[in-house]
Amino acid sequence: MRLIMRVLVSTFALWLTTLIVGGSGPRGFWIEPISDDPYGPLVTMIIVALVFGLVNGTLGRLVRIVSIPLYILTLGLFGLIVNGILISVIAWLSGVAGFGLYVDGFWWGVLGAIVLSVLSSIMNGLLGTNKKRRR
Image (cartoon, rainbow, N blue to C red):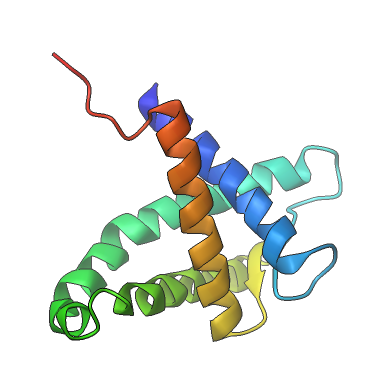
């Protein structure tokens, strides 16, 4: 149940990020839906949130482990660059698929990653989806 809640929180945070960073229309940071039916944008957001979770869990961990010296050197600010790179990877995967997340440039990806992480943290904190289950 907690996994489903986290995916829904990520989806909602991604939607809010596209509204805050990209605004209306294709500029900056936006989503191209799978189809034109009413559920196309929602399905696209859920797919992009799942892909983001997979990329962040696999490639993101590997990049973070390899770049530990840069994290130490920059006092953690290199994490913003890593998140921007991961957003760019997801945008590239979306471009290959023909739908999903699109980013105008690397710095739009960094800005989108900052907004996305802040929104996700706030919503996960409010809903308690980051807490460990007691056994």
